[in-house]
Length: 100
Image (cartoon, rainbow, N blue to C red; front, side):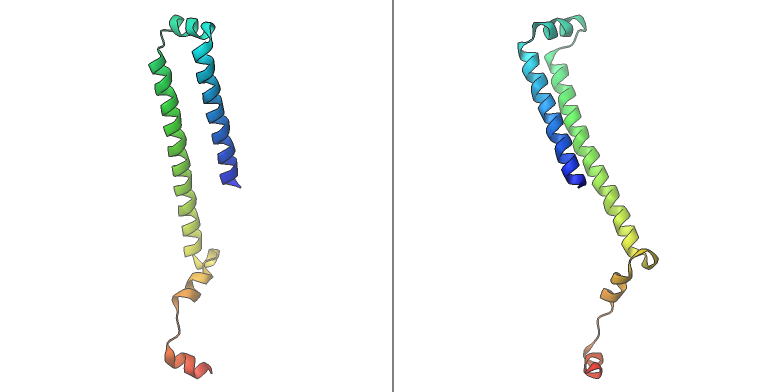
């Protein structure tokens, strides 16, 4: 579910970026605003690239945190890690013969 939410957010942000870039290329009011605030097209490009990198790093950091939390909860037998102990003990041939 979180992946779908992130994908939706990504689509919205990319759509907003495309709409802004389209508007920036056709709007005289936006050109005046850039000139009044001493902003160049390069500054806007840099800001959009920084935003994309920030989104990737935030997603990567979130995945890393979730993986660590999941790993720490499955390593502890008191918090649901019993299946790890069962997998770690493999019976040898003698035990299998006795069980038959």
